[in-house]
Amino acid sequence: MGIIPVSHHLRVQQKEDDEFAVENDLSRRYRLPDVQSHRIIESAMMAVGRLDERIASMQAYTALPV
Image (cartoon, rainbow, N blue to C red; front, side):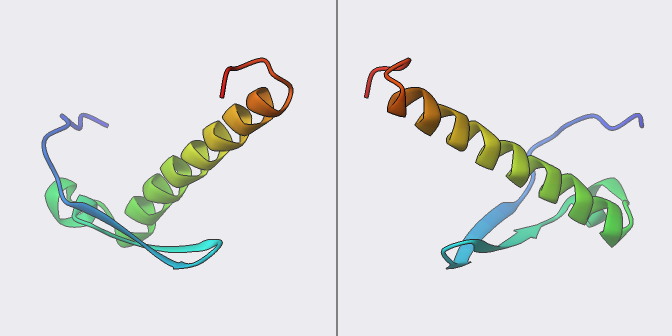
């Protein structure tokens, strides 16, 4: 896409146990449609969640020290 990463604004606020609100400047900074920037943030948040789940599973099965 030709995007060169630079410093940007990203704020995550937990609304409920499984609900988060994210403020970011991807649309403005990279001139992306709001839908596309939403999908990028959603994908990143899901990846972090999967990583957290993986680490918890590894700790549960003592594959990783606590």
